[in-house]
Image (cartoon, one colour):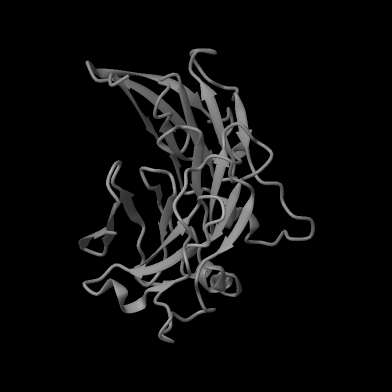
Amino acid sequence: DGETFISADDLRINLWNLEISNQSFNIVDVKPANMEDLTEVITSAEFHPNHCNTLAYSSSKGSIRLIDLRQSALCDSHAKLFEEPEAPGSRSFFTEIIASISDIKFARDGRYILSRDYMTLKLWDINMDSGPVSTFQVHEYLRPKLCDLYENDSIFDKFECCLSGDGTRVATGSYSNLFRVFGCAPGSTEATTLEASKNPMRRQVQTPSRPSRSLSSITRVVRRGAESPGVDANGNTFDFTTKLLHLAWHPSENSIACAAANSLYMYYA
């Protein structure tokens, strides 16, 4: 509506009005009476692009909640819950850590939500809460290295995600200042890896892409990025001390802004 915006921390989401700078309204509060009972925190929140009464927020347990502000002043209950069931026998010490969602973004039409956890990108249809319609493996080669990443705290890195304005591609960052672009139109096999540098094609790996289409009629798929375990296309080892956490897709043009270290890189295709 161009009048309100939200802010979020680990425990609360507040609603603000642009005309009122000294007061906000608490619309979500997950703080328990006893902090020892705290089991999850808020990790990201975003308004629906078209409906000012709807917003989504993610949690450290890997769930996304869609809430309707018209239901009550304090939205303790959710309208819809999106989470992927845990595969039998797959639980490990790291399961909950890597399931934590670091970022969510609505598609421009508001029908889809893109989420990023430590290992994957997931695309959700808000009309289907049984599971994601697409899963994109970002850096599966890291799975055997989770112990090392836990020791140096890299496993807690918060990578952002973004969608193209036409809804046909998604992108997110990784280590060694690399970022991944995946095609999410039905039938697309696009999975491109680029490096945020003055020579972005130096580590570029690409699989054939199909003609771009919209997100409609999408079916559930799992896509692996174009990657070799632990090394890039040139056989270089990945550097886990350099990471591309922040990126954004232009809302109408086919360009991406990526922040790596103290530089901002703009890519246009």
